[in-house]
Image 1 (cartoon, protein in one colour):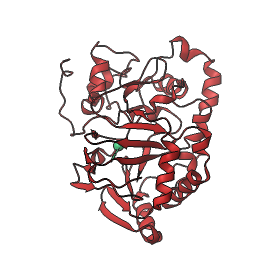
Image 2 (spheres, helix red, strand yellow):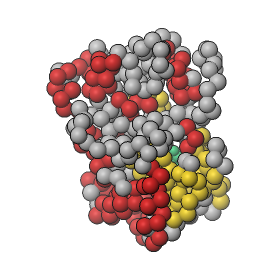
Image 3 (cartoon, protein in one colour):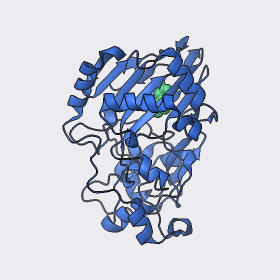
Length: 350
Ligand SMILES: O=C(O)CCC(=O)C(=O)O
Ligand SMILES: [Fe+2]
């Protein structure tokens, strides 16, 4: 057992980094924006405290990968970002060969975000988006569980047939969910099977799934509820939990995303694609809220602050409680601050 990093800065109780939620399987080199940000600022965009020395794009301790895996990048953020920048995924070492496959100029040009692009959320507008969603979509049976931060469910977001079909489309390549802690030196997410998360998942990746009319229809529905551009959506991640399987307390925010053109995840729009006989609730320990799975229900919450949509709201840590009986089927729909699909299709996403 590797000891925890010292000094232990007992900051906000945060739980484990949104590790497995990262796009581990995509495996595309995406150093570009990270290189750009790193080169421009000499520090990470991932959250160094004011006055701290800039992070070097390296690990200063051989325990860094393990600490990162254990969620320390979030728990001991200042220390870890300074000493374990590489493992925490807050920088990419652009001196490594695969990251320099294209010239810096090309990569910078290809992966830069258009400065005129409008973000999914402007500061101070989140409350209005949630309030309008609840008022304007009574057909989906909304319930407000919390307003600070916002947590809302829609009991009739999907018909039973839509939910079942969505699972069939997305679940073709289910495999044991992996945890990911930061980026490796080539800009790919590092993944490892871990007991933080024991479900199986797959991605709505192939053309059969991502361009299916049903997927497009559901995306359009979620886009209009959340007032988001469908381009800001990640590929759907489809999940299956058998009895005993779970996902421990974590956050869907991934530090490394802040260095890519698409920015952080601002919303999780979670779809329950089955009923579950017993267990399998999604609970928010800091908010004392637990939502139970129900076929066709959706659960929507932010990962970021209303006042600063590019900063993490640590209160929305959550966990998938173990399934006791039955099978839980579900899907994550993550919505970013900026266009995800364009940089993703150009190879500018990890
Ligand atoms: O299964 C659940 O209830 C939540 C899953 C989750 O939080 C995730 O996959 O990030
Ligand atoms: Fe999550």
